[in-house]
Length: 226
Ligand code: CDP
Ligand code: CDP
Image (cartoon, rainbow, N blue to C red; front, side, top):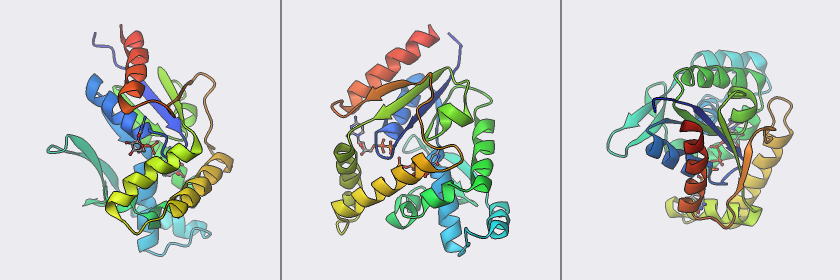
């Protein structure tokens, strides 16, 4: 049918959200939006420009200089994020950004900036967005809300394997510490803390492969699209 919905996927760091969201988008012919990439790109800009995040006026001025957009890389068949016309899809995954992003994402001005743009991207439906507050704040009326969970040790191991491929100097302790710190800040901040929406369906993928978690999500989506 021609029916299009919004799918919101939330959960802690490295639980498999973006993996599921990308594959689901491919299956359904939907647009995937990585909301975390927006917070990471804003953080990269703040780091490069020495923005003091305790100074509200500096944050406000900086946000006025930031233009974010997602563009399709035809070769990879995936969207990549651009910060003021520069492709920063890879730079934003570095540890230096991961170390600061949760503090930046806790700021009200930053959240307003990002959520505004995210809600505009959802206007046409046919969108899958992953993050921390998608089912609770960005799209409280999303037709399908998924909340992914996985054991802490498994999440750390998954993210470590990913980062180690790019930087063999990284240690598992460093990754574990970063994930623990971000989870704490993300779940305890005042504005839009990470939590499962009441109507979200929880999927624990500790023991699920990527194919198995995709299958579960597809069944739920197809049930709504019938
Ligand atoms: O987006 P999020 O931070 O929640 O996690 P992700 O980047 O999708 O997944 C983190 C890593 O876990 C990736 O390298 C995935 O390939 C891997 N993963 C896995 O091994 N098994 C799953 N069921 C889901 C993800
Ligand atoms: O890849 P991973 O799941 O570890 O993180 P991410 O999805 O790239 O998000 C990076 C950070 O952005 C999170 O740790 C949050 O601090 C923030 N974030 C947020 O506050 N709200 C969202 N909707 C998405 C990300």
